[in-house]
Length: 261
Ligand code: ADP
Ligand code: MG
Image (cartoon, rainbow, N blue to C red):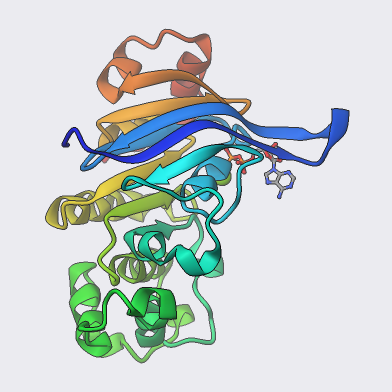
């Protein structure tokens, strides 16, 4: 990882609702992500993990605080001015069943980001069909299946399609929000290893969200631990794992049955 800061979030707060009943999903979170870093975001369900990444990816607006991406402040920009971030920050969501449009063929799904006007302006030279082939091969799918629909694939293959779609527009950052939690235990390790290899091969920065600290340790060099919308611990995953300073982090380590990877 380099010294260059790719994401800089300052005092991010996101409250849902107003007044005493407001849910403070995220509270004064400061975060710096360096280019090439693999940052884990860990915490129990409801701790604010998805809220944080939605704010980073400008899919949501903070109640207060700012997000800066590659030196440009994102907070306050209109959608039409977000093209630089839309292409360079891609997300793989938890469940490919809901993140992939069942009515679209795989070819269309993977090339869809390339057709978005905001992204096309940056990638005019990329041939969609060639890119679909390249991406399907990169994630271990057969290009001969490009004209099939998502339901014709297994769960693990569907998540590979989602990964191919995310990588098609040549992002700088890949955000993965619980990318294996909805998959059969038997295919989780394969998909994690694939993500690991692709992040290496394409020199990406990765933000990897999981409720399972052990999965994060397998994939990430550093991590933050969220509890109730606040960062309660941060550091190299190896030390979070071997010497957690917070009881909460110890509970996360103890809570989930592990799987071998
Ligand atoms: P995680 O991804 O760690 O499970 P989330 O970021 O999804 O947590 O949610 C954090 C908190 O914010 C939870 O209490 C959740 O119920 C609340 N929350 C998230 N999205 C909304 C929303 N659209 N409206 C109201 N509350 C929300
Ligand atoms: Mg979530």
